[in-house]
Image (cartoon, rainbow, N blue to C red; front, side):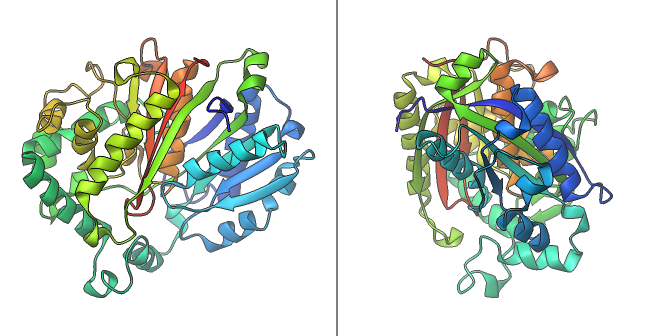
Length: 394
């Protein structure tokens, strides 16, 4: 399959908010129709529908899995519909499937969409879901492991191995929120950006993880229209072209994971994706990283060669990854800035990659944005997928 197979030509998104009166179908209608309008196509030009399977929402998950979306939206040209689930890597796999459909002639235009409505999930169901999702039920679940506990354990390990300080770790939140405060779709839009001191003095959840370093659950959704690169070029519209990708699997059991293998996986996937795209890391305009929790960002910066060894935390503390800094980084603020919409944070990051390359990011627009590094990971980090997107075919 050609590395220049597809392009994103239309995007749609709703603000991340806790609004239980806004149903999943309200979000699906709004995001999908906005993406179609943005693409310049007619809704009946859409021949394929791929949904990211909503987590902990069995009713909407079943409706989407059994093909209700094309009927609801009146997509009369639709040939097939499917749901995809790989945790935070779901959108990456949905895009891969769209690429396969387009290459094989199944569909010329495909919608990839995600929706989450956390605010209507009963609290006990949320607790039970997150106590088991991404957790090994034999070795982790019996001991009461939660995501906050997992991230605390991982953060302790990273701080020991990389030499980062608590102050540096707190500064990651400040950096991510500086972008999020300027994003109309963020749950923290126009909210005060917390200082490093404010992050450090917030309640302790699990050493060294504090309240302001955890995630706020939110409702949200987004959609993308994907076509072949050839068709996108003919349409002469702003687009984001997929230029390269690479992936490595690590392990499904987080506490047994070999983190040296994770570091190497992040490095090698970036190298392979960049090579396939025909560019170097110096050409990258934006490092659009999805990690979900803030602790992973300095590690990503070092593994990607953006920061020297041992300096990832200091780069964030110095404000280099903040809005106005010299290294554009995670311009929706990742989950700590956007509000955590489950697998949808990954979906929103892809939409932001397209938005930046299309020149539609408003105040957050990266100047002369030409190439974007985009990553995703599934579950509690069972794999790592690196992709390179460009403003045009190289």
